[in-house]
Amino acid sequence: MLKTFDEKLSGFLFVVILPFLLFFMSYYGFESSYVGLKSMEKPPDFMFTSVYAYRVIPNFLMVEVFHFFEFFVNNYLPSTKDFLLKNGTLFYHSIFLINAVFFVLSSIVLNKILHFNTSLASKYISRIFHLLAIFFIVIVQYVPTNCDSIAVFFYLWGVWFTFKYFKNRRKIDFIFLCVIIIISTFVRETSCLNIAFFAALFVDFKKVRNFIHLKEILILITSFVLPYLSLKILIPQNVSFFEGVYLMKNLTSPFNIAGLLFGITGFYFVFWFAEPLQKTFLKKYLFFSLPYLVMIALVGLVWETRLFLPLILSGIVVVSHQFKNIHTV
Image (cartoon, rainbow, N blue to C red):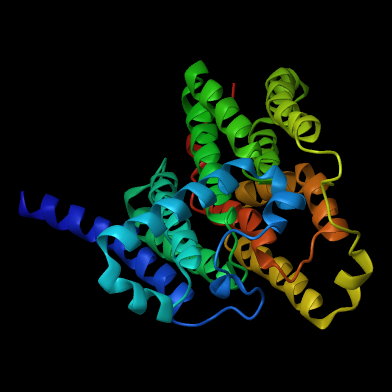
């Protein structure tokens, strides 16, 4: 009984408390020089008139949590307001609360994934990979936004149901994956990478019969495209899906070059740990992720290394997974 309690306590400390403390330190231990989010008094207008306007779920949470937090502090914790304002605006604190909640949820889901289909010996290694993933998530918070922690949570949740469907072939797991892609498309375009992950796991280019999964992939693509297009229709037409073409800036700016090298080196570092079967998967994953990679090269600023985070996390997940213990049908 004591051993079980110790295991639960250590799991809670490792999966919840330690990640939260690291995340807390990233928001309050040092200040981002990339964006002035810490000094903003309220949700900025550009969140509703730029590419961020399509991230309707984060924007909704941002507004509602900010108003609730402001009301709660002013009416129930007025004595703490001066202290809070010394460390950021109430809006900044509300963004931290949203991101911290989804970050901890991401850590919990990641822990489930890393311990899914692993041997007893590799479970200890999985904790090291978990910690590595947490550090990667925390370090990219120098670009704090209202959507990335939510997007990471939904992406990892989609990976979890992909693995479950791969192992058990239960239709309910595939349905949950479709629902997650639909919802997360209203968060951020990262949802399309769940399709790439699924395709890399199920498609074997050496076995033509495995293309029977093409129908499932098309269903997943539809789950992404329909909400994506609906956003284009429902959001005012003066808002574009991207703010500009930054290809030349990505290839010339020292900051963007550093961000690009970070993404490449980070993924290669994880790739180095992979076994042959895992390397095959990661190569297929990169292939199916090409549309996403091309888009971030063209219209994203690669100094925002958060853009590479889903790929690095996918690599960490894959190298901890025992593919040889599961056979596709």
